[in-house]
Length: 334
Length: 291
Image (cartoon, rainbow over all chains, first blue to last red; front, side, top):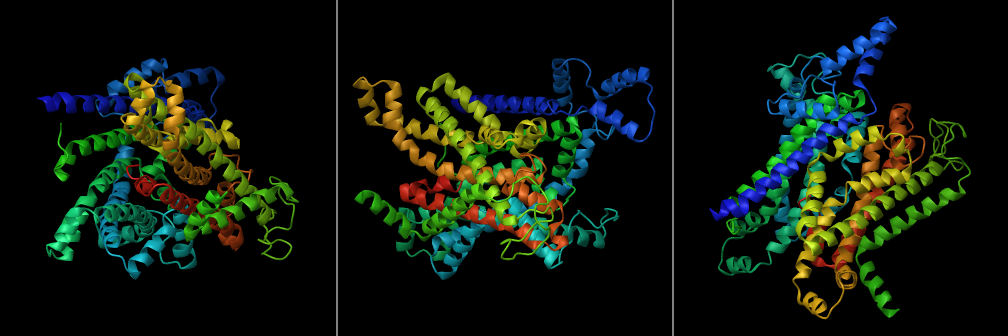
């Protein structure tokens, strides 16, 4: 009972408050964009050579506003936004009317999740193992590894992606320059398609892996260096426990705890997509349609993606806080 | 005097610090050279375009008829200005918020931390892209971009400072100071600030490299600073946009990339060695755990 009152309730209140503020920002922010989707649509018609008589222009604009759900004051729209949100409806996309936003997101999210989930998990596991071993042992190999990481770690992702693109797609054309599958290929479950997807995904995945591993390797190494001087490690060694068992069962297990928090935060950010990765490699994921939406003033689509991302991040933080005692028996709810 | 010499001796024994200082000083020298540039940074077609590196143009010339070397001096200067403005302002916000929230506690603490948490759960890059589209005109100036970046980078450091203050508040010297009638402001500035400054210093450097990276990313997306003003980001963007690689002008593309990599590595090594020197236990914060 005291657990619910002292721990769960304040934590849940904080969760709902932060989510609420985040979603509110996601609603208002796109509406300050200097682009008016209604005017954009009319400019698009006129670009196709459609003549709109001035007396009808007002009427068309009103109709479009109604269709887009942009009539009424900002506060009325805000009310409608919440009502719709509970039904999982973000309204129609404005730039690609009348396709619903949710459908666009559903189309592109498999690409993003496929790429980011695999690389995030793989980088995490590799970094933990490498960091654990490099932090525990000290010899020439780990020194070299450490030196490489010291150089790789500070380079920002975008520069790294650009370098990889230049080296592996331009100087040595091993991988294709852009896209998710070969041009004009139907997405199906054939062997060729899968080969094509892997080939197109390899370079973005490689860059994400290099950056992810370098970054987490160092965190892990530092924590392990702290853990290995703990007295229980000395005790285990004095008691003749095998080195391998000490590393994998005692040292890495304990050092992993902060890394679990880290992983949870990263998994939450997957849903907003890797904007830069997808832009550099022209990968058809969430980040790609998001950038397109910002440029076209597609309020609903920006809002939809931001909402999903905010909820994913806050929920994964909450989830982690609640399940953390399973990984770390020392933490108890007081 | 002897103390200062001992300090530098200790720091320079760390080869990372020595390398970082040399690289940073030479980049700073490059930035200062920009004041003696024979060319205007924003004008095009001042020299023959697309020349490879030669004695006359050390790093060649671009397709836009600009001397790459002199362009680089402006770029380094402007990028450093953005980074410096961002770090200075966000450090001031983080110090005030962290110290205020930590010492006062109660409602101000909760309000400030909720605002901070909200800026942390928003997808940062997306928000920055949207805001820089909204404020396109306003962001064309270097200092305004710095201001915007500063607003999104104080939250985490404020949290670290706050937790530090929370632990200091329970120490005995605080009780002594309060009981002997020291005023709150004076207590915070005289007693707490020295404990906080090392954190502020290392996060200052990290924040600088974050700001430079963000500037490059925004420039790549075609946002941020006026694209004709040379920064490392806009230089890179210009070279990519005009297909420097396919034109065979590798020196145009490679110059900003190499400069950026040198700058990032130097800043990182500086922050690593300084924080290790100041406090070996601060290493966890440096690697950005939990961010």
